[in-house]
Amino acid sequence: MPQIKPFPYAFALPLLLAGAPPAAMLAHGRAMPAARAEEPPRRIVSLNLCADQYLLALADRGQIAGLTHNADKPEMSAAAAQARGLRILGQSAEEVLAIDPDLVVGMPARRSAVMVPLRNRGYRSLDLRTAESFADIVEQTRKVAAAVGNPARGEALVAHMQRELDALPAPGKGRVAAYYQRRGFLTGTGTLIDDLMRRAGLVNLAGRLGKPPLSRLSIEELVAARPDFIIVDSATDQVGDQGTEMLHHPALKDIPRIRLPQAWTVCGGPAYVQAARSLVAQVGRY
Image (cartoon, rainbow, N blue to C red):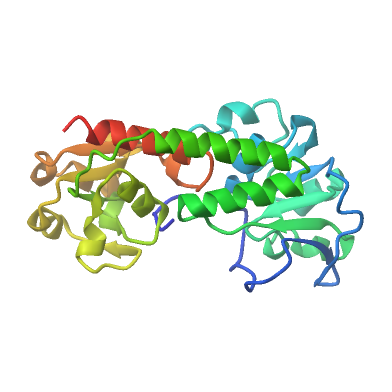
């Protein structure tokens, strides 16, 4: 989702062309069919913060051979508690080589700089894409579950998430909200935040103003637009620099403020339900 945030994946380059095989071999820079793909992988390496969270939800712990360096950081990952006790990797090809994984997962795995020196090793890979809606999360959940050999677990997670979301009201009633980030960045439509807003019955100010998925909006412009709510990363409650200081400008003090942890929204994944539940509860207080 378009947010100003720490890069969620390890040196990932642009996504592969649509239609690339979801699980492929890394060999001579070409996609090749995975050998014995029906056998569940036993040494899975994640190259991406979002992949970490899918693996922690869908793979057996014994299958996970390595997670990214942010996997156990609560401020970055909604699954940090589950990551404790598992191997946390740095950002080197040598670490991956030592594990000799039978599946690497990234966004996409084959374009990660970590994997460039290892292209000829024949590692099977699973390429994920950024999830910008709950529908995308469902798709990715099923994709990862199938790749790790636990499709039933994936279906159970999808059903659980859907039940939780179906039980939520939509208290926004068409009121307008702005997801306002440090340094005046505004999150627009076609994003995970926008999907969450619509689920809560809110209208995204960025869409009303005709803004792209990520844009800049001055404090003066924001105040003039008169949103009913400002949604912010909960970490910005503390002023850390000039970027967060502007979110505490006196001109914004009378606009109701909704706080969501970055760890719930930096990746589209199982934490979507937590974010939706919190957003609905906070909007419902007004």
